[in-house]
Image (cartoon, rainbow, N blue to C red; front, side, top):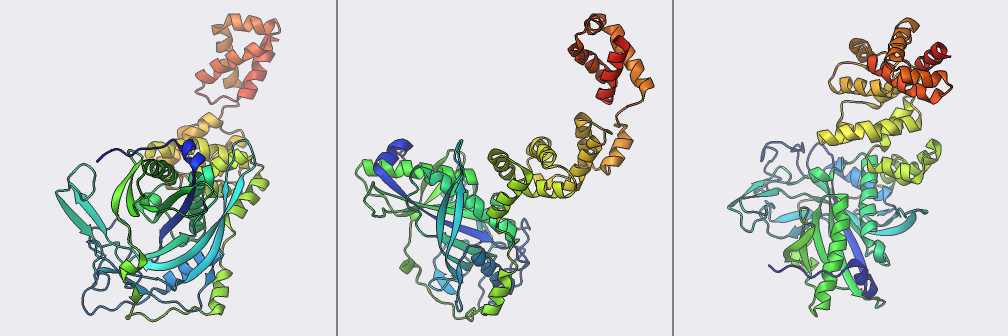
Amino acid sequence: MTADILVPFDEVLERFDPALGLEVHVELNTASKMFCGCPTEFGAEPNTQVCPTCLGLPGAMPVVNGKAVESAIRIGLALNCEIAEWCRFARKNYFYPDMPKNFQTSQYDEPIAFEGFMDVTVPNEGGDDETFRVEIERAHMEEDTGKSLHVGGATGRIHGAEYSLVDYNRAGIPLIEIVTKPILGAGDRAPEIAKAYVAQLRELIVALGVSDARMDQGSIRADVNLSLSPKGSGVLGTRTETKNVNSLRSVERAVRYEMSRHAGVLDEGHKILQETRHWHEDTGITTSGREKSDAEDYRYFPEPDLVPVAPSREWVDELRGTLPENPTQKRARLQAEWGFSDLEMRDTVGAGALGLVEETIAAGATPQAARKWWLSDMARRANEAGVELTALAVTPIDVARVQALVDEGKINDKLARQVFDGLLAGEGTPDEIVEARGLAIVSDDGALGAAVDNAIAANPDVADKIRDGKVAAAGALIGAVMKEMRGQADAGRVRELILEKLS
């Protein structure tokens, strides 16, 4: 396999216009699968969550999951889509080992939601954010496939593998596939828009409560379609589809790589092959998968074993009333209420801490204090443990209480970090940890006075400077007292005592 010829990104934009298309698959968090009663728990032993229906055995009859239909409608409404008064499922026929029925039950020409949009905000360096409208072509219901594991070989792909295993637990889990219309006119911002769209869509899905939308577990996956056309031609080029990109950073990188690769192919006088491509996270490149099929190749026909879905307008209106505040509008509102700068808010969202900060503020902390703890100390601990912030054994109520103890003068920031150590170790509440570990700040003049006398005696040169009016030198003595008292001295009172003794 020869290496791809890549054209520098800036040169691509001088001669070509990119066109983007994004297909995002969202696994719904229903308790059972799309067409049967099998559970949907992630991480179960292989092939333990299957039945004749999701395995496609003869005589098994599917039944539509009503909760999945409800979730699909709520997603469509949140994306400003029209909701079909009547739609139905179809069979998408193709062979692949992880498709036990040899067809996928999906929707073809009659999706449940269509003609929507999402306004995507892309940050500008040192300026106002820019908004792009991404038009949604459709959001349709379907079932997920099983999962293949190719054992042996260097790539984890089927080529070169010694053997393959298939786990059908995932087969039949409800999916919503959200398909954009071609995104034109993005220019050099195409990679950023792709990333921002998937990020905002993920945020919306989480707010709706229909999926945990964890890219690391595959519950939200993005397929990136890209084509190039000669600059100003207005004609769409041949597209490729990079499958199952599973991180926001990789969405951006995949778009950038494919733009450079397409330009290299075209510059060599070759044609772009309409195909699926695999994204390689480790090397940051794509490789060829299979030639991309057109709709007629799938031989769609209406699913004969399922009745059409016809949601009443009353039900749709009722579901419309359950929609949460739009995450983008909510973020703007919270930013104004909290007094955060654009950068502070962007970092808070990027760290996955927006909800945690909001709950911590609701529990009594100031916005800046809540942001400080979650984006510094807690973020570091989560990174060291390799988990999400929400997985830490520290709650927003805990953080608010720790900050309250600081505000009350009972502990300082250094001691607060020891309280967090105790919380993560399961030692009790913040107050219990302060008492059990003896972390409370010492304000007693007797104990502080003795430590101050020791510091003065050990640092006579510093004491002389203070006597000569150089008050700033008191910091060195305060540091010595804090060291002797293991950081538990009341620094303000220590300063007062030093100046009293040396005045």
